Length: 257
Length: 238
Ligand SMILES: Nc1ncnc2c1ncn2[C@@H]1O[C@H](COP(=O)(O)OP(=O)(O)OP(=O)(O)O)[C@@H](O)[C@H]1O
Ligand SMILES: [Mg+2]
Image (tube, rainbow over all chains, first blue to last red; front, side, top):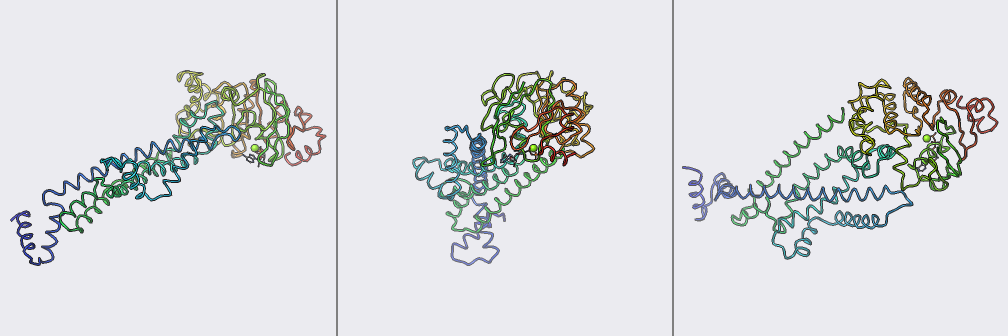
């Protein structure tokens, strides 16, 4: 007797009101959660969306964070008597952005984006990715700013003393050195984002947890879908942490040259 | 070549330079001395505007140095730092060629050839492709000097170029500086190396209380220091 037939027989019994022995009960619930009607495909699809949303949010976060960090560092490094008013204005706006994003819960930001700003949009997954990206940008900007400011000020002076202008010195001398300290923190940000994508379920984003909830709603059984989801996240995080560790060791090695 | 008029600089409430007047001629090798914290570094950094003066003027080849054309001035006014400030992520050769190539003064090939020629001159041609952290302090500083030389500067500013070096490496850096001075390079050096000052400089300048107190050729400078503060200073360093 194969698994499918066994499942049919046992679930028939259960429906007729019979109490199943422990292991048979577990089997039925497990089968329902992952195998019945090929439900595992829904989880896989969910993982795909989760990774896609993570990647998009990180991309938005890095672009946004870089711009914010460069403007803010550029603003701070102006000479006291020659502050550019436009740069000052943009810097002020960006400071508000960072403060607001870091000072409010991600969940509230998601709800505001989906129910107020993009109230008419049906593409909840994309709204979720965008929100996560905007959120991440604030944190990434602080990571990058820290990395840029950690470079020895003598490097900027050496570049400028050779006649290179501010932007060229930034691009060729400061940023390449800052990247070494920024990359590991960006890796951490990626892992945080990976886990935070589960939040977009509340606005209807169709990622992994959403798939699990779909199964739960049909089977009235929470344990296996949720434990399965947790296990999948754990495996993903472990894989990426391992990859990041490898990257960090690489960087450390090239530092020693 | 460089004319400084009434240069003033203060940090917050602390006045450091209170009106420095100085003229530096082409071919001069000027050594600046003075008690710690008297503003020697600040003065040097005001010349190429790494520090912005609060008052007074700096003229370079007859033109006032302002923020507007500062990058052009700096190409001709090289600077050597106490802590070398080599670019750690670039090889020695790239350290030397980066600025001249970027600024369109030389093609990469020309710059490479020039870098190799300069490295040969200081006996470090074999280090062209290594990264700075493989070098000793003395080698780093000599390469920092070569990096400045690759721009073909008209004047070089040195801010305590040997202060961060182990004693046995001071000599090689001073030797290179001596060669440059003999070759007619205009130099302004802040240094505590009185032997170097006595032997190589044609003028020694004592800065104290924010102004130039003494400006004399080395012989007179050391022989009869009539200024009381200079006497006290010399008794400490000699
Ligand atoms: N960026 C700065 N901010 C505030 N104070 C400063 C700054 N740079 C220098 N100073 C102060 O200005 C004074 C002069 O400093 P400067 O470095 O020019 O002295 P110096 O003659 O080079 O001394 P040393 O022989 O120790 O190098 C010192 O009292 C120093 O503390
Ligand atoms: Mg100093």
